[in-house]
Image (cartoon, rainbow, N blue to C red):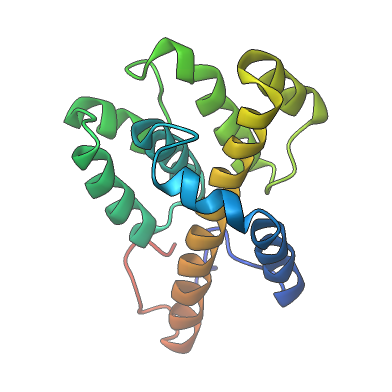
Length: 163
């Protein structure tokens, strides 16, 4: 059986860390999801950047649908799912590149990258971006962890995108 190649939670401790981090900011989640602290389109772009790295099929479907609702074009959506940001608003591109780095770094980006985001947008917006990324990480790694379990139980027969 080929190894399952998508990112998953490697331990319950890793999941608990992410959940605790988000729960400390639970008051801010409502504002984020209502589009009050970041526009809904910007939030979806960020979440699609994380999804492109983590390759969660559930998140890709959900965020693609939501991005279209929020007014993203099909061309931009396609580019985002491929990890490309040239068709996204120029002002958001640094945050999208940061989101990509953040996801590739397993939620632990370079401090210089985090500081640059705070400088470009504001410290509070930087924290809100990190919250959106952490929420997206939980969803995508949980989806992938579930698929990985099904993949192992089925001896590699579950899912065509698992390898």
